[in-house]
Image 1 (cartoon, rainbow, N blue to C red):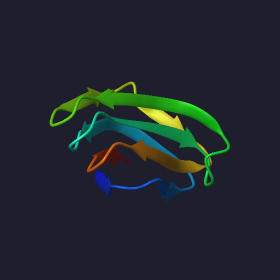
Image 2 (cartoon, rainbow, N blue to C red):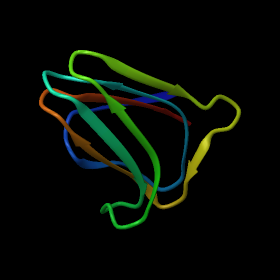
Image 3 (cartoon, rainbow, N blue to C red):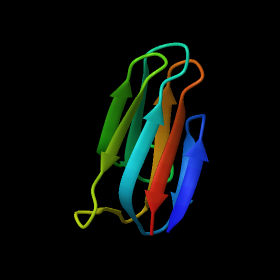
Image 4 (tube, rainbow, N blue to C red):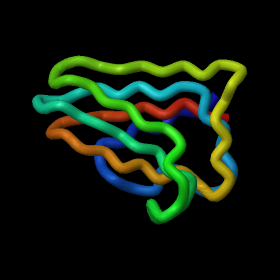
Amino acid sequence: MNVIKSTTTESVSTGTARIYAVILVGGTANSSVTLNDSLTGSGSDKISLKALANDSKTVVFGKNEVTFDSGVYSTISGSGAVVYIYYR
């Protein structure tokens, strides 16, 4: 199991990744994250979450892992938002 913590829009993983959980922690504003199957944000959106300010949203895929073939690009918005991506 691996975990990535991200607070900004960026490429968080290269190559194939199987994501089995995502936690979005909202900061001082409503927050969102979209995980895209690419290195640059130009591929297919595969996972999107929203969280209210000072709240969090957790999604666990378990055995139904979401596979990213090219890489994982995270687009995050909302002041102080943090995303945790659990993958293999």
